[in-house]
Length: 163
Image (cartoon, rainbow, N blue to C red):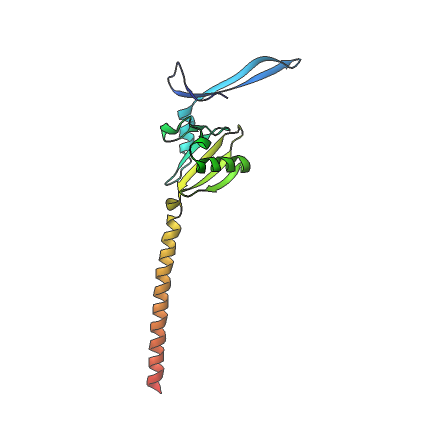
């Protein structure tokens, strides 16, 4: 598998995959190869919709192949920060799962070719709905307690009047 490159004829970011064909007495007799445009692959990855997040792809060595931020392309994930290196090491060890760092929540899975697809969402966005629901439950609980106390006071007052 070649690193992404700009195709000569297409002038588009391209990835080529090649594999030797073994035919006679174990001797390599040819090559099967295919290439595809990164933008087509990226459109499919962008279809993995995360409301406030984004998806990206890294190769087996940790090089960023597809990312919404074009400045990140071809950078080595483990060489960026200690936190990203820890994440990459975790991905290689577990092959798929969820990883949480100080800012983001990421889900990842290893593809059949050794690449990883990662969907990343900021923690604030990931937990926003839960936080909103928690606040709503606290307000509802407070209202229910206040209503219960008012009903009990009214019942106690009525009982005392009857005596």
